[in-house]
Image (cartoon, rainbow, N blue to C red; front, top):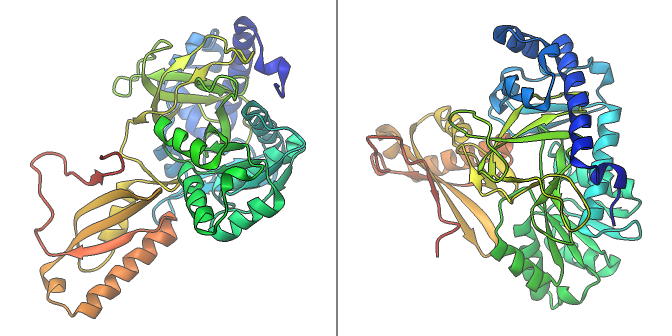
Length: 434
């Protein structure tokens, strides 16, 4: 089943004509309404009318996360504040988050694209969707919620946490579809087993999982333990939220990009050179229809390849391979994006701590954990234990409040974290060991 047959099965030539028309209109709009882009165009000696073919997209400037932070909070908006009906934000350091705004039409488009995504995954209007993505400034919960309602399905807005209660609701409400992070799905299965409930015998048949990296091995584990089909979904707040791309239940062979709304490229992350389909590179998106905060050539830092051949499901849209890694140092911990520099800012602002630290990521059971080891200075090292514990608690609290992730903070003696003559080794990721 396909939700939007016309746009999801457009012949390649028709899709490219539509994309070009929308790209040209987008360039005109941002040149007039977004000073950041006008300046970028002028610096390149470029006019919107210079975009005559889709290949001309490579003439346009890149946009990255730092650009959004530099223009915090509303400097990248292309419409007046009174046209914005919702704001989402991703985590940042003290105030410098990335902020995205949506017009009424943007939200309608998002709902339509998430409805497409649900249908691609095998959901129907008759289903009940258990939505365990977090609600709030994070885009996952509300994105999935309104997509389910647009489809005509019933949505249970559970959000995150209260795991034993979630298991009971899955049993009592007999939900057909679950949306959450893949690691949380496995945690739910473990909790159900502890409660004496065989989650595989529930009506649940589809899981739509995203917001953190996961492997084919993890997919097989989820499908075996929950007795469902596990579908990969992709999105990011800056571009829209969940629903930018999704696997189809028929093939599960790459994620279908909603190409009538997002123009995708892969580039060499060092040179910025555009790569051909099939070559691994950094994924770049241009938002063709967004009104609130349209973006030209947004560098996602995610590494993937593109496949333009039609899928056996009938969709003709380009597919992206499951993301294999990052071209930067961003970590994803339980669905939360965390940069070492963000944690570093919190540590540096804490009296008695040094800039020597390491982040240790492990997976216990099916849940990721983050430990922050940071050296104290000589004077603090001689402090009483209770004072050191107070600092640990303060840093733990600040990381949770500013970044939205729970971390274990461990203060260590001066000069105990290994030094390097080159780039400091800040991250020790043990999730894929063994």
